[in-house]
Amino acid sequence: MFSLFSGPPLAPGTEAPDFTLPDQDGKKVSLRALRGRNVVLVFYPGDDTPVCRKQLCEFRDQAKVWQAKNTVVFGVNPGGAKSHAGFREKNHLGFPLLVDDGGRVADAYRCKGLFMTSRTVYLIGPDGKIRYAKRGKPDPAEVLAAAV
Image: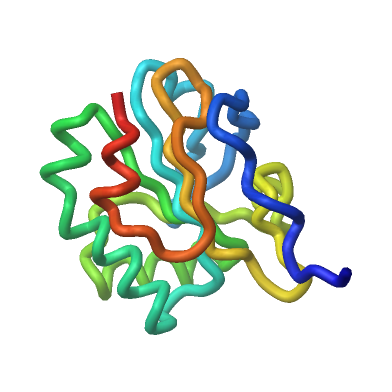
């Protein structure tokens, strides 16, 4: 059967693939450097589209919750730094948007679709293992319930 996606998301309990990507300001973000914290990765198809905006704004609106749970949030897609910076500023996101040029990290996380990034949310625990993985637009409360 033909699939637009790279199979199911990586399973909870799996070691999260390490990466280093620039954010919208060019600052390098490395998963390895975030050990000891929960990390939410929101892979989304595009900046400034209705569903993507809503999803990322829902995480923005839960900032006090994720900050209290020793958690950092990142949006990830192949859009450029300028697009990310404008989208982030316009929506007052308060967390970085990572530039996954070429979709290398999306591919490692099984989020690289045939035509665009497959909307997928991961929560990686302080030990570097995936604690939550789901396609679509899960409620931030559901995602953050997996934080330790």
